[in-house]
Each structure stands twice: as structure tokens, then as C-alpha cells.
Length: 132
Image (cartoon, rainbow, N blue to C red; front, side):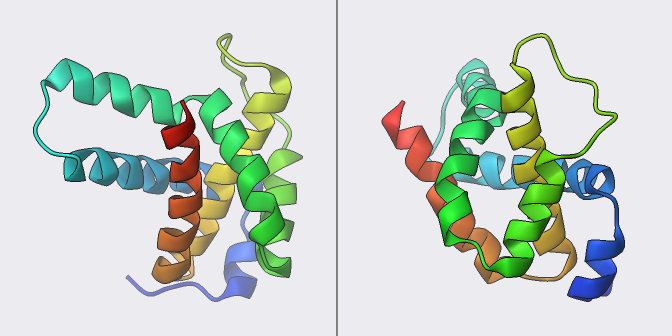
């Protein structure tokens, strides 16, 4: 697959970026957990669920926001302001919108082939894991 240009990726709706970015984020979470070593499957699942929760991603949003460039900040803002999303009962509206923004950002970066930047930003996301 070819990478999209930033212009092409920015033309996609925040919902599409978040749809794709959800899977990208999940792969980073699962890889991180796998790198921690062997664990029972229930523990792997629980760790994954914790890091994929809207509340966890919302906290990551707050850490990511100050380090983003202009294009990344625009995608994050568009993702946060996306409408027509179905919020789960387990999170507040604000948390869900921030989580959607993080997923949109991960989708944007992956679609544009910005793997090094994804690694860098996921490192910032991980600082949330070590806190809680």
C-alpha cells in the first residue's frame, strides 16, 4: 500500500481517521504488552482493555497536545470535534471525544507513513500507563 500525502489524509473525515486509527493504536498497545513478556491471557486482555479505554486515551490526549506540530494539532482538534459518534456508557462525552481525537491522530500518522512519529507519540502515551 502506498502512503497518503498529508493533504490526502486531511481530506478524510475525522470518523474515518479514527476508525483506522483505532486499529493502529490497538496494535501499538498489543505490541507494547507483548514486549513486557509472557503473561496469562486474562492479564494480557485486562492490560489491553485498560490502555484502550476512553479515560486512558483522554489522559494521553492532554499529554500529546503540547508536543504536536500544526498538522497534527489540526487533526487532533478535528477528531475531538467530530460529530455523529456513538459514545459508550463507560465514558463521559469529553473523554470519548478526546479518545476519538487520539485515534484520528494515530490514523493520520499511519496513513501518511509517519512511523517514527507514531513511535515517539506512543512513548508519550505510555507515560500514562506508568502512572496508573
